[in-house]
Length: 578
Image (tube, rainbow, N blue to C red; front, side):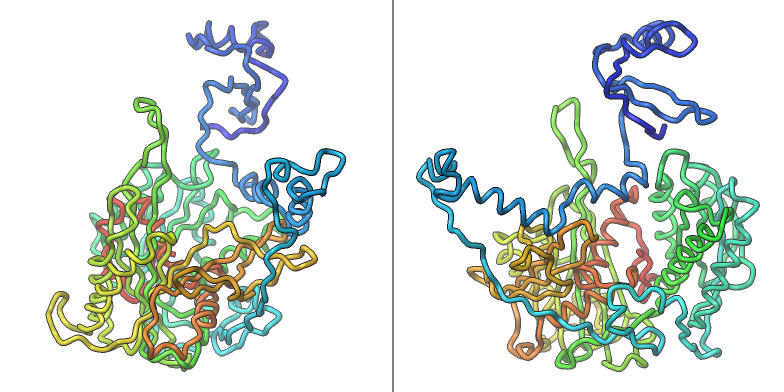
C-alpha cells in the first residue's frame, strides 16, 4: 500500500523512462514484472512514495485506490462545494437561459423556445432565528457568543464529583510497538486531564495493564491473548494508542478490536498517532495541537463512561420523565462485482436504536446519562420493518433504568416521503406497546398506559437550500415553517457548514403528535437536542438521539459480525460508541 504523491498527466508508461535502466516503464513491467500492460500509452502515471521517500511511478491501470490522504480529504469540501454567493450568482446566470427574453441575442432562451416558461421569482420564506438553548458545562453557562464552539470552556470544566462516589477505572493501555518510548507520557497526560475535570470517573496514575501490539492480526491478536489470559477486575477501560500502517489514515484493525471488546462489554478509546504523534512534538504549535486533541479524548472518555459533559435545557412543557428514541440504518458502501458487472452491497445493513431517558429539568439531577442502545443486522438496503427491534430496545431500556415515562419522542432518520405513512404505522404501535410495560419483562401483556407520543422524521439528504435575498447564507438555527408538505406538518432548521460551503437544512416531518404534546414546540426541542451530542462541542444538524444512532450503526457496520455480539445490557448508561 502506497501514498499517492503526484499525478503526471503528461506521461504514459511508454513515454516515461525508468531512471538508470534506459527502458520505459512499459518495458520494465514486461521484462521485470512479467506484466504486459494493456494500455501502455495511457496517461497519466501515478507517483507514489517508496522506500526512503524515493518516488515510484506506476501505470494507472495497475493502481487501485482505497482512500484519500487525510490532508487531501480535509480540503475536499473546497472542491466539492460552493459558497452561498457563488451559488446565488450561478442561479442568476442559469435563469438568463430559462426566462423568456432574457437572452435576446440568442433567440430568447432554451426553455422558452420549447414553449416552457419559468417564473421570474424565487420562493420567498420567513426565517426565524432560534435562540441558543441554555447550555451548562459543570455549572458554567455557555455564553451566546460561544454557542458555535464551547470546547475551550469544557476543557476547563470541574464537575465537583462527590469523592465518596468516584469510580477508579482499571485502564489497560494498548500501544503500537513503534511508540514504546512515549506511551507512558501520553497516558499520563490523558489521565491528568481526566483528573483535572474532577468527574465521577477517574484514571489512575499508572495503568492496570499494558499490551504491546503491532499491525493487523498482531494488533487484535495481542488484545485477545491478554484478555484471554488475565483475570480482570470490574470497570475496565481500554486506551488504544494506535498507529495505522504507512499510507493509511485509519487502523484496519479498528473494527476487529472494537468487535472483540464490545462483545465483552469493555469500554475503549482509540488515539490515532497517524493523525498526530503525541510523543514527538517538534515545537509549541505541535504541542498545542496535541493538547487540543487529547483534551477532546479526555472529554470523550468521560462521555463513554456515562458523565453528562454538558447540560442542555429542553422546553419546560415536555412532560417528564421523557423517553427520546433515535433510529437510523447504516448501509455499507456498494462495491463493484466484476462477475456480475455491477455494484453490489458488500454486507448487511445495520439498524441502530438509541433510547435516552430524561427525568428532570434540573441539571444537578442529571449528572450522569441514562442511555440504552441496541443494533440489528438486516438484509442489505432494508430500511423498514423495525417495529419489533424498537419495541425490544425501548422495553429493555425502561427495564434497565426502572422508569415509567410521561412522554416519548421518536426521531427517525432514513425515511423518504413515500414511506412515512407505512413506516410510522409499523413503528408507532410497537413503541406504544413497549411504553405500556415500564420495568416489566419484555413481551408481558399488561394494560396499556396512556403515554403521549410524537413521531418525527428527519430528512437530511434534501436538495433544498436557503439564501438571503442578497445571496448570503442564513444563520445556523434558522427556522423555516412557510414550506409545508401535502400531508404532514413540516419545518426546516438550517444547519452549520464550513465557511466555503452553503449550509444545508434538515427537514423535520411531524408524522404523528398526540394531543397532550401540542403545547411543546417541536422545533425548539429539536434545536435544543442538536446541542446535546457529546461528541461535538457545538450545534449539529440532527437531534442528539438520532445522531447517536447514526454513529452506533456506523460503528457496528465496521465490525465483522455487524454488531450482533455487542453486549448492550452491560453498556446501559454508557455512550460506548462515540
